[in-house]
Amino acid sequence: MHKDNIDTAMLAEAEAWRSRDLAVLWHPCTQMAEHPDTLPLVPIRRGRGVWLEGVDGRHYLDAVSSWWTNLFGHAEPRIAAAIARQAGELEHVIFAGFSHEPGLMLAEKLLALAPPGLARVFYADNGSAAVEVALKMSFHSFLNRGESRRKKFIALSNGYHGETLGALSMGDIPLYRRIYSPLLLQPLFAPSPDAYEAEPGESAEACALRRADELATIFARHEGEICALILEPLVQCAGGMRMYHPAYLHRAREICDAHGVHLIADEIAVGFGRTGTLFACEQAGITPDFLCLSKGLTGGFLPMSAVLTTAAVYEAFLDESRDRAFLHSHSYTGNPLGCAAALASLAIFETEPVLERNRATAARMAELAAPLREHSQVIDVRQTGMILAVEMAPGDRRGLRAYRHALGEGVLLRPLGDVLYWMPPYCIDEAALQHLAKTTLSAIIEAAR
Image 1 (cartoon, one colour):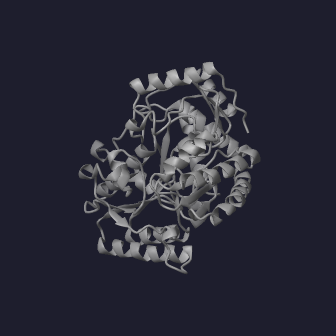
Image 2: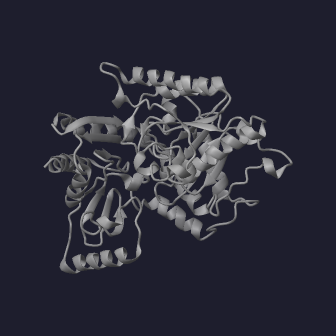
Image 3: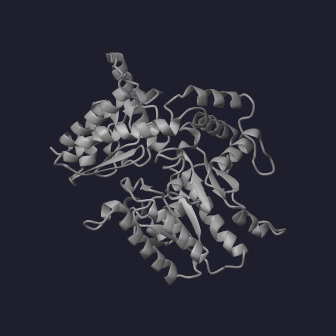
């Protein structure tokens, strides 16, 4: 655990930074009126491994991987070096009509690692953009094949897929969706297979299969109208880290196949080893028609996303008419720096036993979290791989109080409502895990006061 080295000058620098920041910046997912008093603003100078160093000299354990992006630690030297080498050769080039080695190599590696049957890679800028690409590709591919009635999408209740308008349309979290609902597409929402909502005595698998039967009913009611089902495999992250059994994915794939509908797997948050396998879909033995990737794709260094799809989808766009082409672009599509970062991140998976270590770390996380189950203010502790969630009993702004307390103890433990969760970089060690567990317990106690 890092020792803080704070002096008066550093505290003054941090306070000056906050004043400058609040004079010009607008931060994401924040009610800015809560700054500076209710919600502390933390200026960060540097990061190393699982630790962030504040301008004031304090250190913070990044228990949430900086919005679930960081895999191997901050300033991971191999990824940083790969970006630096690439920056000295080619920082960017238009990807329409041009190509480059990092973009080609990354596509080849992703297809080699992904579930079998995916054949093409389309790059975008971030997770929301990847979802937009998949939605448009699905609809347009059916249109090109003469199936013009297919205009609907199915999404899961409590799901989240991003905040651009198309991606937001597929989400079902009122905090994000409610205000913008007049602007959004209106998908069909199927009940989430979330095991937390299981009936008394019902197993997670039985709950998943019951919900899959309800999904099948929606498909039957809208035969020939549906383009795709979109879901987050195994864990609905922004929806409170709600988790479900892989049996649902297996049945969802069967249902989609039976009705000729695409399956979009949004693995933006759960991909690249978070759930215990490289991709969460592997645990159900399925291949989606679209696999959306971002966040950990570059190891947390640069914004980038990729949509992997099938040869059948790709071939639906091949024609002499430009109207049948996929005329969708981002200025930084296939950015060489992002591709270089992603290649360096994937190389770590190839040269080190990352998944095996993650499983051992996940087991240790479970051990350390076990005592939390007995606390009177905890109503559920759940885990999938290196994602562990602690659901506190509902209370007025308990999550905020827990967050503020954890920051004071040197831990970034950003809540989702009343849910505290651990989603640390893979390099977290025993001392940091113990500090995380101890701080989580004290945060729960403080939040209940």
